[in-house]
Length: 407
Image 1 (tube, rainbow, N blue to C red):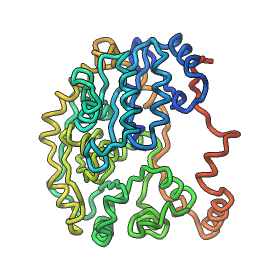
Image 2: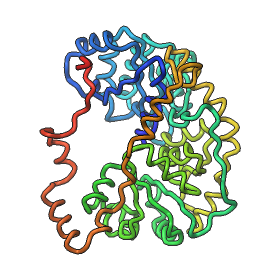
Image 3: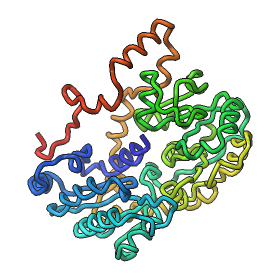
Image 4: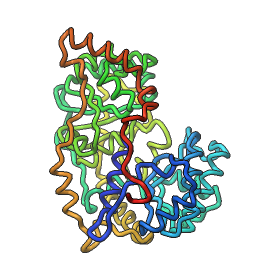
């Protein structure tokens, strides 16, 4: 769900007084229609095609990247990549497979035929693309768009001098970042009873709704129904950025290894500390001057006190206006109007969002059922057959409204 933060941010920033943004719902890279025909319809309907991406330069995504490249090759309108990252494992661009390098090179070449430069998440991705032969003028580091939902004045401040055991805290995690120190991790969870784990994987949502384990590979983590965090209803999954941000404003501190789990807090003004366990996380954190540590391996069960002391946002606050200016300059250099330009604000969109009754964060459904209700839930979960089967059931399922024909 971290992707919803930067996707919704770019949509809001480009949905201006003079231009209407339309979401393609990943239709182009999933559709198998003839790319030339699709591109012709897009050329006819739209004035620009903006592409916000995550770590798209990675093994396993070459097919989608190549599909986008096919479409772009046939477009005549501007094409702007508003943020893309590389997944380099240990952080060395030399380790990236040739298949990823080739797909990324073709993609960037196609984009540069339609734009002034490509916006990337951080210096590691810029270094990767330089090694592919692209110049500094063709690559612009812009960070994460989800931190630019305010007009350059975002400031993150600590509201208390010290975190107390009963204080409201949020934690996020990629399992590998915490599995090496499970005893300390669970001691910490019990020491802070108002700590809520904010889940972001769809498998975790399935666990909350159906009472089925995501995995038992990490028995000490709240990823299965026997964990005390599940039993105590201390897990939340947010279906949209609005409620996510509202919740993070109620927290005094957040930490963990998911970069957008922490950005959700930062963008709401709540200090967070990132456990930068891989290059995807560290390059964004480094660019924005977000406080980080490389590992939670050596910390004891007073980890929260230690991390809160390290969550110094003076460098972030100092750097943010410059990063914001660089981001908006990138949009303008590529011909994209944005809401921070004079006369381009779109208060009607924000008003519309404020009137929508978005659902609250999903908790443990089973926690609010009696014995009979829990037994019924388990029978329904058995009949359902799991999320994998859900994905195969297209009849009656949700399909995105976007179609290039506009009908």
